[in-house]
Amino acid sequence: MPQSISNYKEDFILFVEAGFIAVKYADEDSALKLFKAAEILNEKSQLPKVGYGYLHMCKLELKQAALRFREVLEKEPDNTMAETFLGICLSWTPDQMTEGEKILEKNAKESDDTGIRGLAKSALDFVDRFVKTTPTPAELQAKKVSKTKKKSPKH
Image 1 (tube, one colour):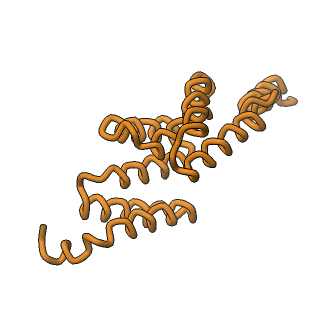
Image 2: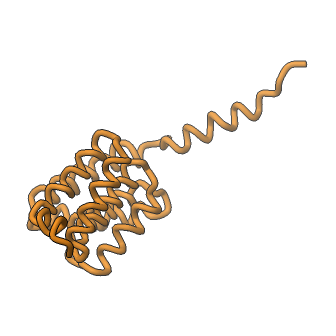
């Protein structure tokens, strides 16, 4: 590793945290650069990949996010942060909701990390209150589209 990069190796976690903060403020460009810098500083760590997945999740690019979280879990099966984020993505996907809820329920009960337990519980509450409600947001959108198509323009 070049001397200039090794000077910043101890700042790895700061780059990751700053990347998550950039995501929170919808600054995708900065988030990508910060996660990439973290990857350069510690190529073996999975945290930047979790960050990329989190960025996709926040943009509701759920397939891409789930893919990133699964990649992390292949290398670190006990990574409860990646697993919980995967559970969130799946619980927001109608045909994978049950699988996502199982992951979230497991981490809400079993995680050693109180932050992860709280996140999983909040996500389960969100799914119950908003995703599972009838009609779902997707069903409402479908109704709007079908009503628009039924109305024919007046000539």
